Image (cartoon, rainbow, N blue to C red; front, side, top):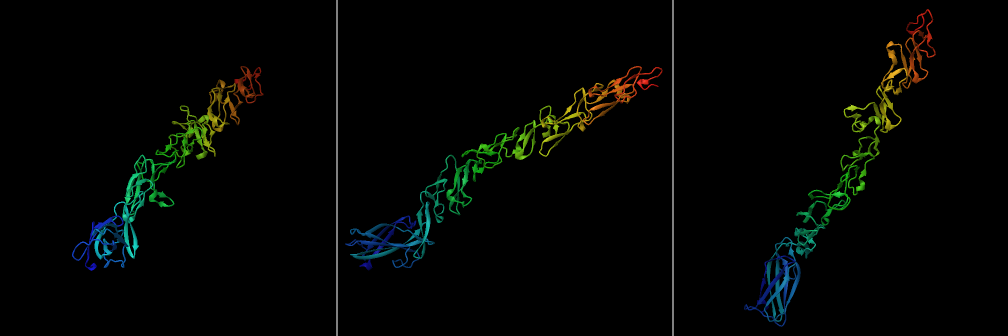
Length: 483
């Protein structure tokens, strides 16, 4: 009877996703008369085999794509076997598999078999394709991704959700970032999402220098102390604060400029204390300076030295401009359009020193701050300031105007008056005109003294020679020797 029996196999879907879709199977056993065979005392056993679509025979003795499945059907009153079964794999590279079912029973003795081709569908969203070798055949199946994963390409597999995103097992559905939007783009070649942009104030993190790119660590991270990202979309890591600025806290804000009067040469400064003050008596023209070279001495000072050794020295009295009290030595020795008096030069340590003064000016030295070319008083004279001569008070026998000395009574017009300077520039009266006695015992009392009418003096260049009365019977012309 078994030989005449046939089985009608009905699979309610023509295609399936391996490893995911349940197959609804209906098997009906018919006898030789075409009548449905009812169950007997023994249950029926439904055997399911999955074979390659190109297999010539599908049996237990042939390589199967998955272990044989035996389903027990023990309702003797019914003639239809209905069951759900799952085909877990398909052959890699083949469009379908062969499903072979056989129904058999020992009492009454009955058996029949039927086969059907089922199309293999690709893995749906949220699933990855896994391959394996089963009995020498390359097979594949679909596995659902975990809730904390996503998948772009089933062939490339499920990917761990990046640290900066939220996933639902199929795709990125949100962001871990609060307060802004990050931007992700699919990389179909690798089957991953790449983080390509973060909001202002966040740095893009996607690995480390030592290990390189790591898709799982991708995130937008608020810039830390000493770093910023001020672009509308940040496409890389936070940048260190530029020299001249700092940022003290973790946050979305930009780096702050060092205040006027301070500077900072460091990149990535994370404290306002790293903005160093300028040297005394100096400041900067603008905030955000990166070098001490930007520290400019106050108007009444000049810079001595360079870099960290720069010192602002008070301007010497002779280099202070009269209008704004600025220091001409910091401006090419100029006060506006006028040059300051004297010749100035720098010493090896950078300090300015007055070397010489004009002819009519006295050089004041001895103290750096007091250096100047000073005009003499009205009752003084100076022989030549260029030679370092000083100002001296006018002697009794002369008239002075703060620069020159002339002999009283216009005696210089005679051409017979002689004044001689000493090393300091002090003038000594050495000779007087005829008829005048020389007095130079003391500097301040120096003068040419007129001997008077009827008097004469033999020598006008010797203070020891006194005036005498002209002898009777002689003539003393202009107070000269008798004749």
